[in-house]
Every structure is written in structure tokens, then in C-alpha cells.
Length: 137
Image (cartoon, rainbow, N blue to C red; front, side, top):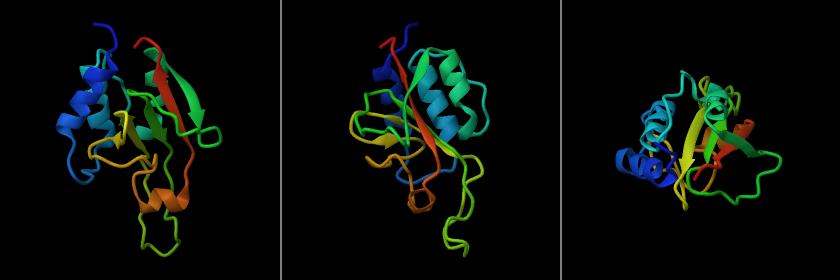
């Protein structure tokens, strides 16, 4: 089966919750399989970039070169980060985060927004990230 960003995005949209379930990597990986990829072997979202590259994705931008111009099926992989305010009010993330772009918003295990960062802790910490694209659309 060839890569289908449309099928991957549909799966992500159909299975997304209103709020985070703390299982972004699992949900995005299932969406990618629905789009025609083989299963990606990574546990933490932050470590899924190599699996994406092994299946034809290339890194098209990062936090320093992000133009905000995403294509349907793009996948963002965000690094982990510690407590961003130093007071424990906003929790860090040891696993990082990943999401797929549906053409309007980012979707992981929940429907996010246009912002690549999924929540306040990420927006405060601004961990590094990479956006991947599969050219076999």
C-alpha cells in the first residue's frame, strides 16, 4: 500500500479525543499505519524521527526554520523538556510529543490547534522539534 496522507489524517481525526490522553506516539503511529506505513518501532514520541525517515519521510523544517506552511500528513516530533517554570505549576514531558497535520490543525491523541506545541508547558519551554514530510503522497 502506498503512502496516503488522506488515510492517515482521517484515522487520526476519527480517533482523536477532545483532550490529551498522554498517548500521542501510539495514536500517531496507528494513523501512519492506516496511511500505508509499516509500524514504526519507537516508544517515546521524541525518538520516532528515525522511524519516519526509514519509511520515506524527510525533515523539512525545525524550530529555527519553521515557516508555518505545513502539508497534510506532515508529522512533528518534539523533544522532551523539564519543568518549564521551575515551580512545578507546568509539568515537563520526558517522552516529548508527536502529531500529524490535517491541513488545519495538529492532531495527536487529541485535536490540538495550529500551534505546533500542544500545551502551555511546551509553549513556555519551547523544546526543539522537527517537521517531517513524506514525498510519496
